[in-house]
Image (cartoon, rainbow, N blue to C red; front, side):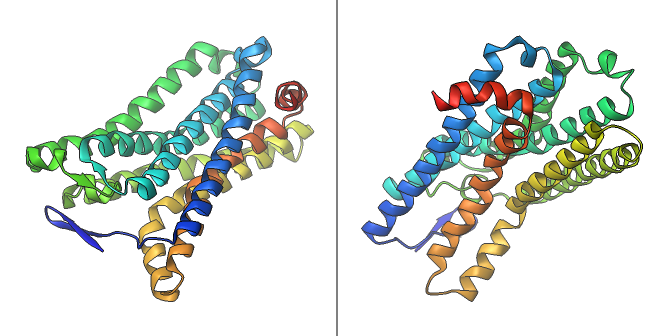
Length: 300
C-alpha cells in the first residue's frame, strides 16, 4: 500500500491480523508503562532529596530521564496511532515528529555532557566545584535544548516554504519522511548527524581514555566513572542505530519477505524502546546513593 506526498512515495506497512495487532500494542504499551513507572520513581526520588538536586551529576541524569520519558511516550503514541487511526493530519504529525527529533538530539548531547562531568570529577577534582555548579548545569541543559531545537526547526521552515498549504491539512502515515519530504532536509540531516556524531564520539573517547589512565593510580571511583562512560558509549551506540533504521528495515524486508512485519516490530523495540530503558540501570540501580533512596518509592 503506497501513499504519495508531493514528490515522495512512502511504503506503508501491511496490516497485521487483529489478534497480532492487539498483542503488539499491548506489549508496547506495557513496556512504556513499565519504563515510565521506573522513571517516575527516579524523578520522585530526585525531587524529594536535596542531596540530588544540588549535585550537577544527578541534575544531568534526571534531565536524561525526563527526556527519555518524553521520547518513549511520543513514540508509543505514534505506534498506537499507526494501528488505530493509521493516518493523521500533517500538522499534528509535525508536532510529534519535532518532539522526537528534539529529544533524540538531547540524548546524545546529554550523554556527552555527563561524560565530561565524570572526567572533571576524576581528573580535575580541585576544579570540579568551580566548574560544575548547579547554575552552570542548568545553563548547559538550556544550551542542549537550544542546540537540538535549532538543528531540527529548519526541517519545519523548509517544509513551510516548499509545500502548499493544503499539504498540512492532508492526512498521512506519520513518519518523518512524509511530513518533511524535501530532499534538502535529508542533506541537512546528514550534515548535522555527521557533526554531532564526530563531536559526541570524540568527547566520549577522550574522557574515557583520560579517566582510564587516571584509574590506574587513583581510587575505585575512577574505575566506576570509566565503566559508566563505557555504558554511555553503549547507550549512544544504540541511539545511533536510529540513523541506520531505514536501510536496516529494507534489508530485513528483503531477507524475510513473509515475516517482515514482525521484524519491523522487533526493530522498533530494539531501536526506540531499549535505549530508553538503560538510563535507570546506569544511574538509578548502579549508583548506591540513588539506589538506597529509590527502593522506598519504587517498592511503594
